[in-house]
Image (cartoon, rainbow, N blue to C red):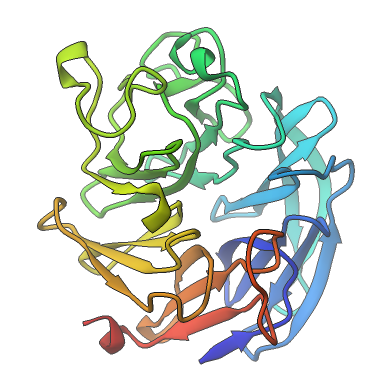
Length: 317
């Protein structure tokens, strides 16, 4: 079932009370979808430098009165905090404040998915921005997952004192999700060979660009839980829903399910049915919402694209 249609290069979904906020990469708009199905513009993020894979990307709600927004500016990628005001159906975003800026940017590999963990801290994947070797440089922010306090300060218990880096050796992480037991999972774009699903360990080095896919344990790298050929995957947003990790795939055009009880297996659903899939989300009533991404310049738009599709959980059994 289509929940909403005619979105323009949408990128991220986040729940705020009974509404869902949607980011659009190229327009810079944050839009509110109400429980009744109405769609309204909330704000257009200022200062965005569009081009390639950059623009308005990830959204994260702090659970209180702040919406965090990842976007591309002229001097790099950045995360801003907006004050969230008003009631569902009339949400307002005001007073944007920089949390972190001047993050590495390029025409691609900008990462952009942000999320609050169960520890209340903000996790920020940063792409290698085309500088492969910097992903192995602990002092560079390219190819890292950062972990920050909500105000942008470095947590005292980060792996390296004084550093925002939580893990390194990444190429382009585009999905973050936690299981109920606190395990953190991340989806990652490879180059020409393997895309990955990883379990993220504090201080872990995931090998890029020395190794892509498996085979790095002997060199001190963390091997992926699973790796898929890039043509079958391009894993973007992920979510832990029930007893599975669900992964939205762009090039692969599938919704992939990985059971938490067997992280080495997976099952594909809806191959090619909706085109490119950018994000997946726990919708109301136990449904699974999938965000298509066919209008981003790399897909084949269909009538009504882009859209949010609601899938009853029984159809994923």
